[in-house]
Image (cartoon, rainbow, N blue to C red; front, side):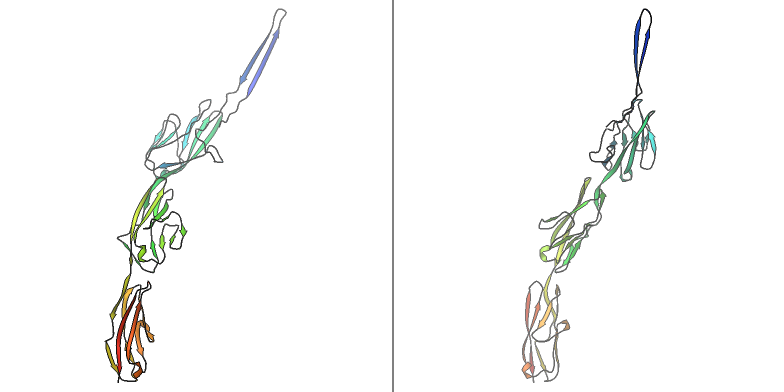
Length: 312
């Protein structure tokens, strides 16, 4: 792209005498002035604007190739408003002989809008360069040892990451299934902040979960080991094998059990809270064997035959 102004004047001078005739023609052109940017955005509204992503710590060169007559002076304006011209070096900034701006060891604070200005006696033009300094993702959350989940309950695995541009979070579960964007499935929920939710965890969900954070500056990953806790029912307090009672006197049979998930305790008679069976106003027909059943949500059943009640 070129920008120019040009004005042309033509002069014709004629003279004549008795002996000779002659004609003199002269053309004068005003000095043209034009500029050309070395790199142009393909889809930008302003073809002189440009966006560049630099890697942190790696020297970056911002181009500003300009032509003009008279040769233009090139001035760079930093995001903080600092202005300096060719041959000047300020801290980590330096303008090359061809007008390029060199930034040594760039970091995140160097990101922003840089303007290259070219000026001569007949004109002025600017080029805008938006600089983004990329930073390799850093994962901020780390688990201390295996994460314990309780069978039947939901479990949240966190993976908070920082980086520039904003990193994308990808989870890979023990089965190899990958979640690379926020979504909701029958088994998993991946949130916008990178947290993975496992719905109703079972012993089949145990294993290593891999969280990867990546952007165009690099990637980082962590492994989150998950243990699913599930204990079969265990009776910790049971009534005696035989109970003798008087007819009409209430009988209380205690049964306490532990397990994960919490066991469900049932009797063949009326169930009292906490697994206690109460027989109100017992009579001789209540004598016999009582069955106590203890079930887990995942289908384990334990039968305990006790106790024998003798009435007299």
